[in-house]
Image (cartoon, rainbow, N blue to C red; front, side, top):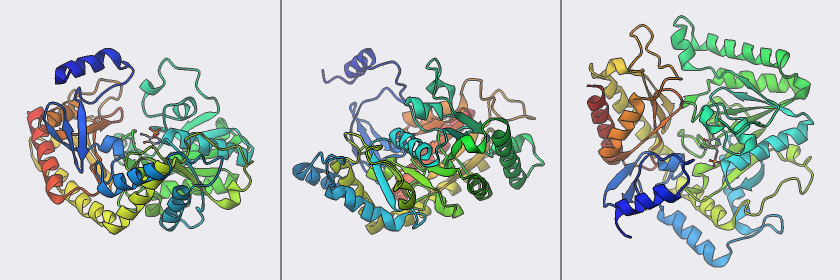
Length: 444
Ligand code: PMP
């Protein structure tokens, strides 16, 4: 049936309930910063399919590159031979790596698979089993990646036993500062590094610990950039103990923060970096990048995967790298980021709204607004993470009604802004206006 409601009913009946959805809508097409719905509505998309379509939906150059590749070679199995788009993509990525030492590539399909490949590499290279992850971290949904995820219990609730050998240390987090108002960020970083030291002396000895895994900007956990001094501290701890530093840039990488990789902000060199999402603007493609000197120690055959580094996805990735450069996407990201922050600060200036907004944070076009809990007392405005979400979800819902797709994140009251990196000034202003009105209507 062509009736929208009938289609939604069909979906609700036959698509697993294990999937949650932001909206019960049917997307029929996407074009730049917009998606078109079956019922005729056109929505401004500030979700990018969770940080993926960074160059807008169906960017003509990316779609054409993929279509052309479909006519020449779809499946060039990477365990059978090299294929051209795989190598071309490496050529494009080499010059934009955060450090020239990152010169050895392995492409996978999803972020999750790349995370697991990184863990496998770290274990093989160090001969150690354990891994340290961050509180609030998200790394994926399969057993290994889920076992390393600490952003929400829903991802693993009822699914145990999880992968053993995972230890967690606190991420220096703004909430801790708001609860300890006299503490500076510097002191918070010190405390976090002290906790890491305790993990290594109380829970997993360095000789058993292969790596520390961290998102350079915490994503699903609340859109919180890791402070430079924290990343530097992790680097030192890894060097001291012969552990590897793995940066997960699946969400924050490939231009999202205004630089090709968020690691550039701190200058901290990872041993392994994981990328995905924006890399191919919607084609399933991820990468595990390390140093040849390290990966030369891997046994041939220990990595692989039927669709890993698919030729069409790689060709799309090559086109993405070209578009990023030719269309000066990073410059646009920076300009739109400034406008977004200004607009959010203006929203916050409204006296009716001010008490409800705890924080506006982020980097580039990976930005979050955190609300206080509507039930919190004025003395302790921080939302209790175990109570149900309220303000952020209501604001997101109101935005949807007004034509803006926007996502929440984390167990706190957070709305995240991940618009396309090449969004126009007008569309950025439009999205911010809708958000401002939605907040005003929800808090009144
Ligand atoms: N790491 C991070 C930081 C992510 O944000 C995600 C996806 N949200 C993943 C890993 C998993 O990637 P995928 O969904 O492609 O498996």
